[in-house]
Image (cartoon, rainbow over all chains, first blue to last red; front, side, top):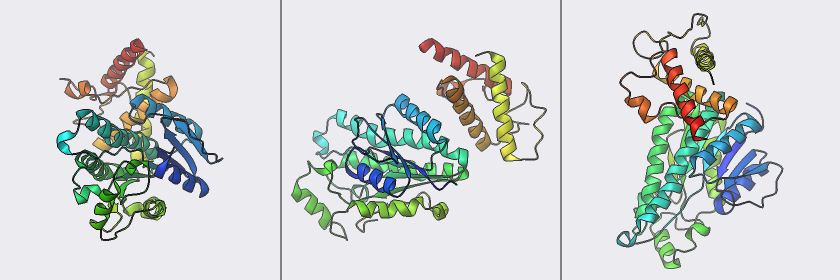
Length: 234
Length: 103
């Protein structure tokens, strides 16, 4: 394996994705990022793709560009995500479609196309993002948590199908992180959520990269189909 | 893309997959009637997946055409297109022609 590993991160314009892109570019990885809008990230190790990851044609085109540029992909982090907080009885079906489209459909597409590239070199690390809202069964998060449950099941099943190609697939589930994803959530709701966690504090970006760093290590070949939550829930 | 070109692509891809499966395997005798799946076939199910993915990638790289070979129609056909090199090449040609009409 070459020294410079190629990593794809979705949703890199802001929030966790932006931090991940800057962190891995700073570590010397060749970072391929994407979002629907342009990014102002400046790094010689970073390239940005304008792509809607829910659109199959755009995803395939992005992977075609990565294949032409690097001829490989070592790591994929499915970071792009949407959240919604609403009472079940008040949830429009359009919200269900939008949340599942970004959180599940896009993850499926990026996992599938990543694995096709990774299998050429019999090595790959796929990291999906879930949430503590899944094990905590948080009221008001039925749709968001359900979409992430689907991501967890996808992660565990494709881990079994892809390990023959040297590809591991795992997920990390952060406690709330201070990003745009939760900016609409009232402070009382966040405080209430944190009280339900053994570790009663918000997660930070470094907590997330700590888990991802473990998953992507070449030595972690035997770590697959795992979901690691932050904050002490299981 | 002519039928002969597609057949050659399928055989070339098959040769690569079989070599990865067993480097000692002699791939000289591969032809249109080589069985891919079912009784007497050369591939296990995992190798069949690799063959399909490899062909899809070759079509994307060489012709910039994206097709999904193992689509619902292929899976529900009375005579599976995955039986032999020839039947698979026929099905790929059909998909490529349909895709060309769409563009």
